[in-house]
View 1 (cartoon, rainbow, N blue to C red):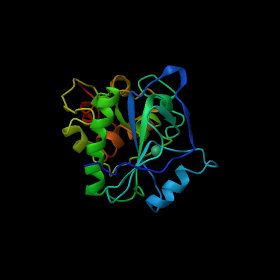
View 2 (view 1 turned 60 degrees about the vertical axis):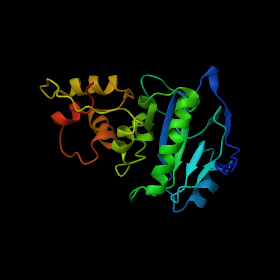
View 3 (view 1 turned 90 degrees about the horizontal axis):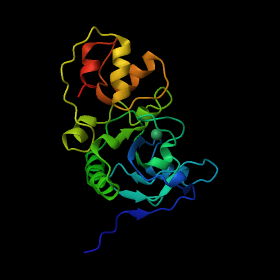
View 4 (view 1 turned 180 degrees about the vertical axis):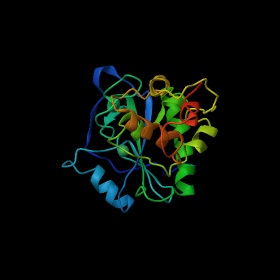
Length: 219
Ligand SMILES: [Zn+2]
């Protein structure tokens, strides 16, 4: 039986990937809009010059806007693991969510079905699945503190977190070194870096740097 998904809703906002680059990352976003319809309109409006490869609606419906081999315009300025032009290196997935509430179960299930397909097609490891805030710390906050990274991690769809004990004097340079090794290479101050790491791994974390902030980054 043929599946009707993904439903195509083509966006004009894309171009060729630059310098022969191929997808090596998958960047997750929330739309921060009132509805999937509003988001689709925005992602297809030439005036706004934004797009993504996929949008997953809150009801679990999957919409494709840009072909995977093309360069969609979702990531913008930023850096991951010392590499720029994230748009040329990634597949972008927008999750229909205002950013203020949990992600729905049908939406998470659809994401968990889509990710392994993309990872297999482009040979992307779990470490290659990142959030917009990971590569644009201080500028972007999505997919935000409500997103269940631990669930993806347990399913092998994001970096496994071992929370290994680290010998530490809680020095910020040691934290930065560990964060860099995990991919957080964007040039930001200590506070912004701590915010970005916590958004990804410890969204409940408050106050100054603590041992747990280093542990989630350890091998
Ligand atoms: Zn985003």
